[in-house]
Image (cartoon, rainbow, N blue to C red; front, side):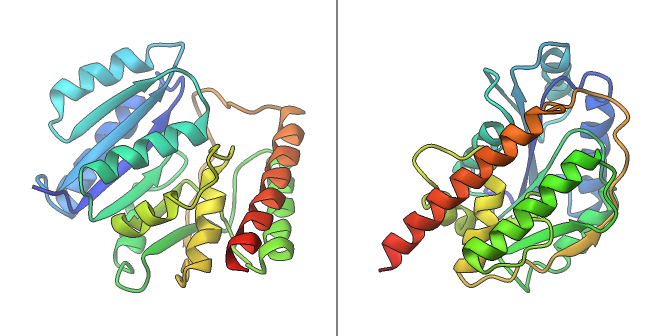
Length: 243
């Protein structure tokens, strides 16, 4: 039976909170949409701590849980791997959230209740508890999306998004052959260019208490420049295919 929903959650070095996060999400979804209606896919991105081992144990406890292990390839690659798995299952809807426990689980209902309005719905962190450098880069990338693509997307890279499965499958085929560093940004742009409003629903963001921040300090600047370069190349590709 094809699932009504598949949740995709990348995880890297989250041994301190992964049990709580996965268990709480599964309990919530069992009550909210029904125990036999969803899959919960966690992609372990080559964690160096006990995250992988803990997930394997949880997989035996929860029939909805599917654990995918991969060599460390970064958040973007883990997200794409999870999307591919969810699509292969024939999921009607796909929801992506990170494993760092920075979102309120109950806010999922806000997106779910609006799924008849769009095939691609984004949360929006009105107040965001991240380092100043991350907030600055987010503003730069938001400005770049407006300049390069004419799209004002409030939180294009947010890991709190609900997407119709067939629509997401179509968008993934339009990504560059070499997956970008932050594919969620590109997917948000593509969704807009393919006629979907992203809705941009305010959700609560919390301060990170545990785990490993994968991009630190000056590496953020490299990420910003890389993302800008990829966006420029992507814009040229879109213009070429539209001409």
